[in-house]
Image (cartoon, rainbow, N blue to C red):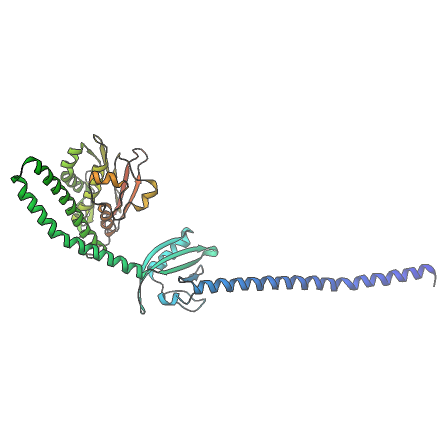
Amino acid sequence: MSQGERCHNRGGRHARGEGAVWPWLAVGIASGALLGALGTWLALRGSIAIYRALLEAAPVAYVLLDSQNRLIAASSLAGRYLELPAIGLPVVELDATLMDLVLQARRGMTVQQRNVGLKTVRGDWMVGALAVPLPGLRVGLYLDDQSAVAQLLQQRDRWVGDAAHELKTPLTSIRLVAEMVLPRVGPDQQRWLERLLGEVQRLNLLVQDLLEFSRWQAGRTQLNFKEGVDLVQLVEQTWATLEPLAERRQVRIEIDSPASVNVCADEERLYRALLNLLDNAVRYSPKGEAFWVRMRSQPDWVTIEIIDGGPGFPRQDLDRVFERFYRADPARARQTGGTGLGLAIVRQIVEAHQGIVKADNHPETGGAWLSVRLPVRPVPTATVR
């Protein structure tokens, strides 16, 4: 064999050796990748197990639904409040309010929150429900037991109602005695008795508002719906009641409305709501100025807006305007009068009519801007006359 042939054979053996190495190298790389993926999967599985353990141990129940409302996962605590199917099956017995919350979260892709009363075979519950939209149109539903809080609030409202009821008799006695003594004393003493009567009157108004608010909170107020309640006429009647107070404060009213705006409503309750709204405008409007009442009618809804030129509400307090005893400026509230319950009662009345009331500051006047939206024909819970 020549030297060239020997070199050629050695080159061929070397090439065949390199070719034999590549498959094993590929197998090693693939095995390493698989082992890495397995390690990642095991770590992820461990993290998921930790999160599931945390959710299971949390005092808040959770339910995870897919885009078709099939059950993906649920904590054992959720079974206290809900009748849940097996994993993968549709949740068909979900409370209507909770289902509506889930649908709103899915449609709007925003977190929805509401307090919901649940009635189950295991008992009645008041829960705080939170629906969280997730990728893939899934929704996480969290339920927090608020029954103890609701019970405490009921006890507080009951105590307030009882205390207000017990105050009625002594306040009436004080007023009668003061009125009897007033004409029998000298001018100096009369000034003190008149001040006493003013404070008694203020306390009487507070007691009346407390009693009414307690009745609303306890659900003991029955609405009597009546056809053809004219809101324009009702506003004029309300203004006639407040006109003496407005004259003392030199405040006027400007009404912008159609000739008539008719709804099906409880006329007496709406009168009380309008009285509180207009009284608020009279008390906080600047001396010598007017406030506006605007009414608009649509086929299914009517809107009433009360706009004044007063100081308005602090921006950070707009969500608290309709809370009981809320006062934007407590010092000024004592000067203008009022009990701090007027707007809270307004909200109760409007919501009982299936309406909405909102508070804001008007962009032009800078004063309070209270808007009431009422259905023309609500679904009545009481007899329609």
